[in-house]
Amino acid sequence: MTYQATADRLASSPFMQALRCKKADYTPIWLMRQAGRFMPEYREVRSKTGFLELCHNPELCAEVTVMAVKLLKVDAAIIFSDILLPLQSLGCGLEFVKGDGPVIHNPVRSAADVERLPKIDCRESLSYVLEAVKTARRELPENIPLIGFAGAPFTLASYLIEGGSSRNFEKTKRFMYTERRAWDKLMQHLSVIVSDHLNNQIDAGAQAVQIFDSWIGCLGQSDYIEYVLPHAARTIAGIQKGGPVVHFGTGTSALLELMKQAGGDVIGVDWRIDLNAAWEKVGYDRGVQGNLDPVVLFAEKDEIKRRVRQLLKQAGGRAGHVFNLGHGVLPETPYENVKYLVEVVHELSSK
Ligand code: CP3
Image (cartoon, rainbow, N blue to C red; front, top):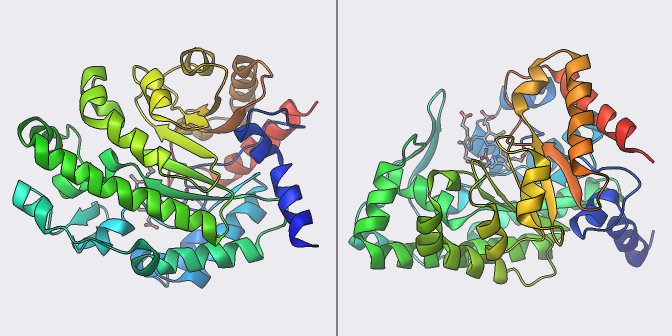
């Protein structure tokens, strides 16, 4: 196929149509963490390779990316990578400790720590991600779009400051409230990295990008407006290469209008709000992505089908719905149920 024919096929795929709020033949579905520990084939790869080692191996990342699409029959691929890799480029000592999740050995705790963060050339220091994008694009079916991604500045800052995952984000918020100038400087620094990295992934062959502001739901509305919105808006405005952009967060029922204001062609929502209510807040000039509770996949098939029907009804047959879970597939999820979900979304949404 010629380059133009391939580009046309990708652009007319149900996923790309939905991102642009155009009618599709059926509701496209992909799943956050669609290549992950719930999948025996992924666990097999991981039995021989550490997580970070895997992230740094473009061939294996591409293989895992394509594998998930072929096995699950989802409508889009997401590059296998991690939002925390740019923090490794910043020299913060990233490690994944079994059972504990990510650990940052040199966290940011003061204005002086922010000053010490190096300027990085993302194209160079994250070249292995771009290589994975190129390889995955080459190996994917020609009608399957590839999603690139990055963490949003707030979520990245929260890992940098907390030194890992957190429940209450005390250190992050204290830094934000007491070190205003250093906070803005940190967010600005991260915002440039995120826009650059997303633009580079688009250059390398990604058709769309998603920004994960996974933990933004810990903030109230006024704090979002004051400490995050300008930076999120600049990050998204910095994605110049034709987008489209999915802007995702969890616990965001009260923040959806503000996230839309910050930007994104599609707003990703979790299950804590009904999809119809979420879409009303976002406005019908944008698409929405979501939002089945990942734990529904632990139920019987009948219940999964009922919940899919309910969700599609909430979407009301409008153009611009991308089916997804409200957050990533959980490691203990029954594999058969993940496959069933994809089948049933296609079946029930086909015209
Ligand atoms: O969605 C996909 O299939 C693409 C791959 C992807 C991963 N991480 C692979 C991964 C994506 C999009 C991410 C994003 C990511 N990474 C986020 C945002 C999404 C979200 O979940 O909110 C966050 C917060 C991270 C940071 C991170 N990476 C955490 C908190 C963990 C969990 C640690 C653990 O022990 O579960 C990871 C590890 C990680 N990233 C895994 C995968 C498949 C599991 C690692 C393993 O194989 O053991």
